[in-house]
Image 1 (tube, rainbow, N blue to C red):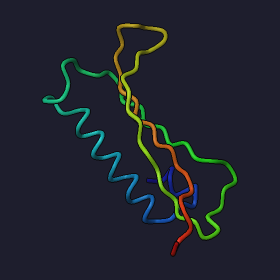
Image 2 (image 1 turned 120 degrees about the horizontal axis):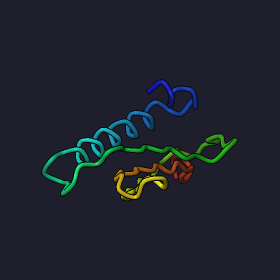
Image 3 (image 1 turned 135 degrees about the vertical axis):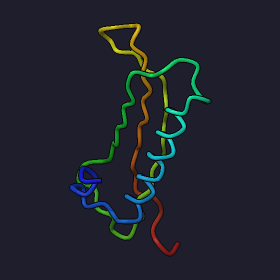
Length: 92
């Protein structure tokens, strides 16, 4: 939460991001959904630099993938990436 606050994103976007992160984390770490235990979970948020909303609304999509440590092929992880973008203008 503190990291996202530094980006001055709209409160509703931060709330939706956090809810999505919590859902993804709970699902990935649940013993029912994985065959082998992950050793790490990586969450990345990517956004365009220097963008202001100017009447547009922020949105995001999530990409999930399995990952391995490049230094140790036996280390298994899961990556959750969030891509933020400006959507259509408000009111259109």
